Amino acid sequence: MILAPRAPADDKRGMTDADPEDPFLEAGRLLFAGPWDFLTAAPTIETLPPMRGIEIALAGRSNVGKSSLVNALTGRKALARTSVTPGRTQELIFFGVGPQLTLVDMPGYGFAKAPKEKVEAWTRTIRDYLRGRVNLARVFVLIDSRHGLKPVDTDILDLLDKAAVSYAVVLTKADQVKPTDFAARVEETEAKIRRRPAAYPHVFPTSSETGAGLPALRAAVARLIAERA
Ligand SMILES: Nc1nc2c(ncn2[C@@H]2O[C@H](COP(=O)(O)OP(=O)(O)OP(=O)(O)O)[C@@H](O)[C@H]2O)c(=O)[nH]1
Image 1: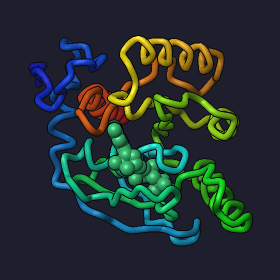
Image 2: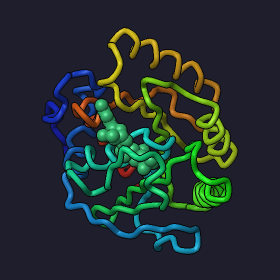
Image 3: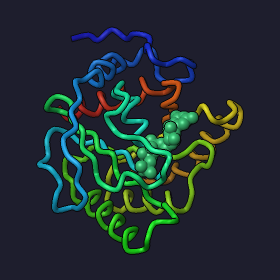
Image 4: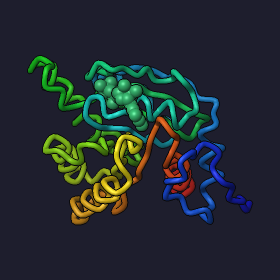
């Protein structure tokens, strides 16, 4: 079947890097149109649900915008709860669409005020999940456009490189940064991930607020599913 590319409806600022000729733009739009279901919340590695289809995980510091991105990608206001309180999502939250895709909202890392034992438990859960989930096709590591990559982020990138889990960096909250500063942030981030073996070389700029960059991200997921079919 030939999928005709169509201008993404929700990209209000036009700052998407989506190639209008990308045949997966429409497939991505259809895939994320749902219907989506909340599957389960797993606080520990022992409580993970059975694997189904391919899994895409969203990782990132507390408050980086993971839950907002799940809602924006799926077009649902409250599929994932969002919060102004950093560190609220403390479980791996699983969402499914059809039989082929599971999206995982991971607990935020790097929340300075969390008790040490809690941080250690989250770190163990995140590490065990990332190393052991065989249907995990890609991790999107979310980085706040205002702050860029921090040491706590590079710890996760190191872990993913060591575990040979394919990942891509997603810059969030692009609407919060001036376009010139944003372009510099993209360049700086791509330079930092260039030599990382499991990293996709280009970053995905996004804003859950304006919808910018979401069509490109949906298309990337649709492409992954097609490649694995
Ligand atoms: N301006 C702007 N604000 C955003 C964007 N994405 C998220 N936010 C805000 O950032 C805050 C944190 O967003 P969440 O989606 O809850 O972040 P999270 O990464 O899931 O947070 P944890 O549960 O701590 O892991 C909320 O106040 C959101 O409204 C964005 O693209 N633009």
